[in-house]
Image (cartoon, rainbow, N blue to C red; front, side, top):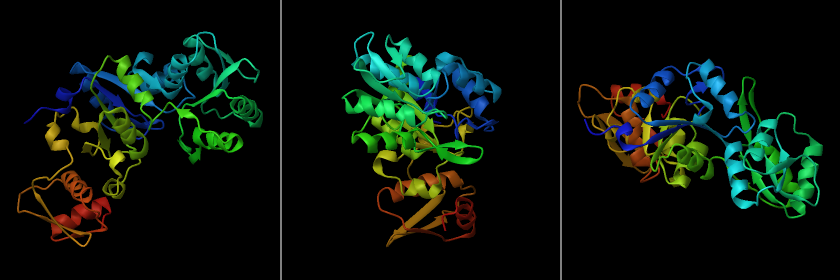
Length: 335
């Protein structure tokens, strides 16, 4: 067996919802995977676009789903936005906050002065999700942005997951302010590079692996930051989306779940590329899949192989050549 993922990287940057847990439900195997990463001496960071919760609250939630974590291991888009503001503004500058008290605390932690009302002293606006944001909050921010204040959005997520379904996220509120001002904010969270780089820097890691379930945030963010990425199939991404992924949203590695980490699987075995046990012929956009007679043919390997083919030449349809391939394709819903 070749070197494992943990042999190659100094830190693992884990997305949360869809990767480690689903809301209040832990994803099976995630706790053991994180524990194993720590046992191997690799740094762990939990990286979230959620700007509404403090690192302490995120760490507490992780503990409740069976993944012990310290606040120092949590990197939020609110922290990244505050760091960005601290780099761009002089100490003591006034920042108008649209978001929670946790975001306000992050602004204060980098030596800036938060406010909720516009005045001529406001140097910047920082905008993060809060369920209590209302028209008057956006109105104050609108005035500041129109007057030339630096505008930083914690993230541009149009929706956020909830038990009732997808609800309006920070990006939806950002869109309202964009319409009102005609300006675009600087974005601190994924898929921009700042949040992931801040997380890696906090771990002292020069090379980090981003682990997540969304191509448009986790994987695209890794590409923007110059890091390798592992996509897991426990959350949002579907096999069809993987085949159709744009160049900036293509993971380097693919796994069904985090359970591959404690097994110390070879990094080469998780990489996108041709896989033993499968044969794929491509003609006029149709990929025909069959087995090569091997005794076992892993279906995740099939998806790794299909991604390799599709990223070289578009695949519009996938067909099975034998019963084993038919069963694997049925499980991925790629017929």
